[in-house]
Amino acid sequence: MDIKSATFVISNTDVRKCPESSLPEYAFIGRSNVGKSSLINAITRKKQLAMTSQMPGKTLLINHFLINNEWHLVDLPGYGYARRSKDQRQELAKIIDSYIMMRKQLVNLFILVDIRHEPQAIDLEFINRMGEWGVPFSIVFTKHDKLSKSRADLNVEAYKKKLLEDWEELPPIFVTSSETKYGCSELLDYIEQLNKS
Ligand code: GTP
Ligand code: MG
Image 1 (cartoon, rainbow, N blue to C red):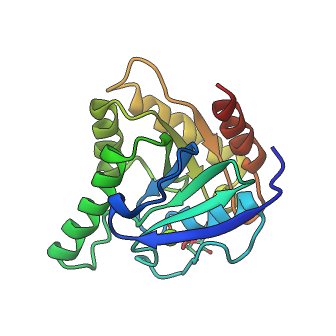
Image 2 (image 1 turned 135 degrees about the vertical axis):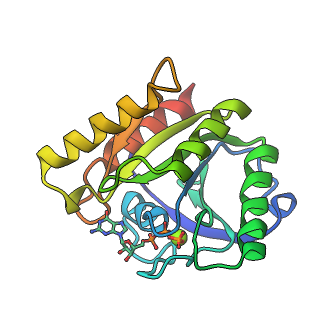
């Protein structure tokens, strides 16, 4: 899919205030700092569409972007940032969960995972919860440029093995880098395919 236009629509903390349109919607979720906002900029080829930071906890709102006047891309706050108070973390979790549970337009959730790390309990718990809720999701490995190809392949295989301990089949899996744009066109093609179905 070619990106002809990508514009910011609205930020808010309340799913009920999200755009009323019936356009299909795709959201990026994952731990703080995993690279959600960067990947939104990479796939839209707009360097500053979504705000990014080296410091975890940059995105704190539900951010809607309109792509090609046809669909919405949504940047969500990260989960699990340890250096926040328990109250703040619970508040963010509430925003994320209510968005995922209530947003009828949500076609697919992309759960981002840093390719460098072993499977983390917080991600596996989140993935399993999405499965229990029946939310369609895919897994997107980020920061592929930070590892050698062989190491990246090994880590992806280890992750799949871990997922198969809980799941009979694997969700769609993508491997990406916002730095090199590796895997970005595959992700967009997948969204295009879902938009058509
Ligand atoms: P929160 O909004 O805090 O939840 O973080 P986020 O998931 O939106 O992460 P963000 O996109 O802000 O990126 C966090 C840091 O990781 C930034 O310093 C990015 O430059 C870096 N980063 C993101 N993606 C990549 C990537 O593919 N490769 C490399 N090398 N760095 C990346
Ligand atoms: Mg962000």
